[in-house]
Image (cartoon, rainbow, N blue to C red; front, side, top):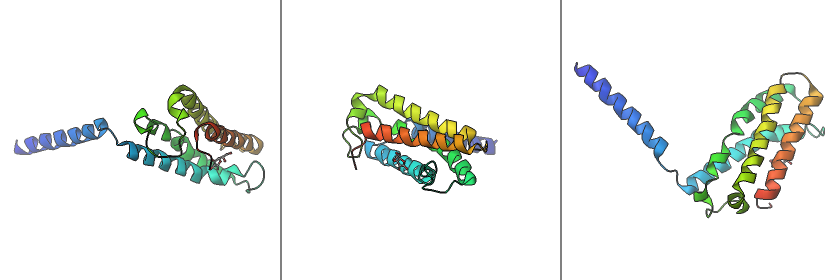
Length: 152
Ligand code: ASC
């Protein structure tokens, strides 16, 4: 009986702590850091692929398969960090993101679809198709950066 009470109290504590984390509002600076971290990881795993279509980087099927699988998850992550609450926090995001949120979200969805396409065909052995898919991802990165990121 006592053990049951203890287990009940413990599970209540664990559940309410997790719920607390879910409902807590992340600070804008934290959201900005996290979305930047997401973009950096996307850069880390897309970087080695980006030169493959032009031949600047050697084509390695195993690297494409691994990185595409990572990118499939990573490509979904930065977007929930671009909230209205972050619009005055210093970053490389242009203010247009917050005045054209629909267009920005459309571009982010397009990016995710280009990554999904690569992940889907990464194991096919179709080198030309895989290179074309990598090229489409690169174009999507550049297109969104042109509109919504401070020029480096
Ligand atoms: C990258 C990277 C980008 C994109 C972009 C594609 O590897 O860091 O921002 O590709 O340069 O044109």
